[in-house]
Length: 330
Image: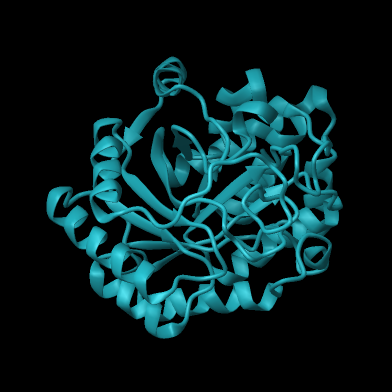
């Protein structure tokens, strides 16, 4: 509990403390979760934010990211299609609303959006905002230019996701078709436009514990409002196929680390939750305050009724509050 009090008093954990968290003995993990929960409860109470993804464009991506089934080097047998029509994207938002998801994430594969894709997203967001005024709309379209970020802001996009994915040192081991700095620049353009920045990581891609600590600290420096923590779900046909470095206990330690380094931020358990946390999924809600419901981009998620039951069993409440960058800067 001393480390929780240290953080709540405005202090930062040291690298030695961070490494000790990731190496926490398994028989002390409940004490670690208790410390993380003290911070989570202070800032978020017992509320959990629900997010839902729609994969509006699948495959056809020219990038060579080693974890991704949609990349040009992937041989994974996934469905491939061009950008959805506006009506399909808007219908997805209505489904998200029925499932009590407060955030709807419009995702498209590719290096970055072309004009036609931007037009479809902008028109879709405008209609979604008319139909679901309280819904937070997040876009994830790849690398953005400043003028594209401003256009999305004007259309009503509340949040933009662009993950750093891994540490700057490990980045070239995961992809060489774009740089780590290009990802950071997109986050900067998003912040400059007034959109709330969302950026996170993928754990389990052969990185070191020091890399994990660096990721958490980098996101603190970037001031990402929402931090999705993905756990690698290695897909056959991708370069990282067969990688299996994670266990549920280590995943919990990672979530605790991200909470302790980024105490005020939304920490979201994201892709790979079901296959990596397995029966320990409910414990992830002690450090984290947000989850995805439904399916992910190319992999299936847990049934929504199971997520609903998990929240009820743990005594958590669904949070419907919309977050805007302007609100967070007040």
